[in-house]
Amino acid sequence: MVATLVPPSPVLPDVLPTERLSATGRPVPAVREHLRRIPDARNLLTVLGAWIQSFGVVAAAAWIDRWWSYAVAFFLMGRAFALLNILGHEAAHRLLFSRRKLNDLVGRWLLAYPAFTPLDLYRRVHMAHHREEFGPDEPDLGLYSGYPITRASMRRKLVRDVFGVSGWKNLKPLLKALGGSTSRPVAARIVGVQLLLWAGSWLASGRWWLYPLLWLGPWMTVWRVINRLRAIAEHGGMQRSTDRRKTTHVVRQRPLARFWMVPYNTGWHLAHHVDIGIPWRQLPALHIELVNAGWISPELEYPNYVALWRALASG
Image (cartoon, rainbow, N blue to C red; front, side):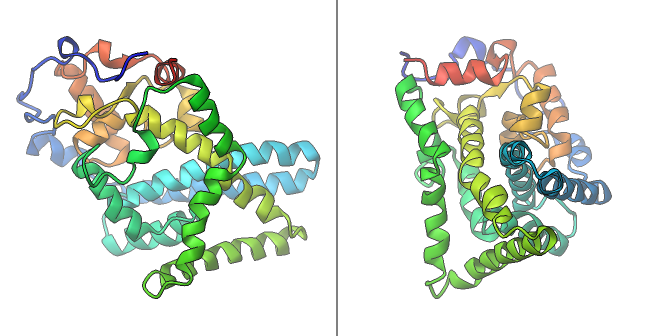
């Protein structure tokens, strides 16, 4: 088993800066100005679409009212949390809407709080992640450090995700925060939103168990699997470096992965780390700029996520 998945120097051509890209890969001001535009109306429709897809799954399962409809909905709701969290991530970067108050209002109440996330705390720790991946203040280091690992170790991690062990570990801080003086207000808002979702589903369907089965349950299980697999595909096996090609993987984006695990262009993750000020709709365009400059070489790209996961659990 190799000790790292960091690409070797021969596949990291030193081609920057160019007329369109700076030495770090970030677009020059004229190019960046175009890529930085935020389409407010389209993003509003995107948020509404995420809600329709998420709550539509629950409504469809209750309307069909068969055991298999609830089983299918349980797995699809893992994707629903991917939708909400990734758009919440966009709001954390203040790239969802051009007006800050609208960005934060929608980000908190329609995306982050329904997905059990304190947006403002997430924003602070996530910016530490972007300042220096694998650095001393890296908040996500425990999620993707130490790779590659053995297949047995990977199985143990995924089993903990599947059976809710990881979910409970993530839920406990929220419950504890209800007893804290400084963290109580945000925790209470999140819990309040969850109670509204529970009450709404109960009143609409007459089934008290719909919320714990198709909202809380998938968040604690299916979403944990999706989140881990996505996170390690972004940074697993990489290292601390100012060259983002050594901190972040490149994976060819295919329709099934984009539907299930990396919607809203979050799979173009190297482009996102090169310039965190580029909205999600323009990440493919920035990726193309990096490819055209020769900075992203074909040898850097994994053909699909399965190939990368195999490399991450190679022993």
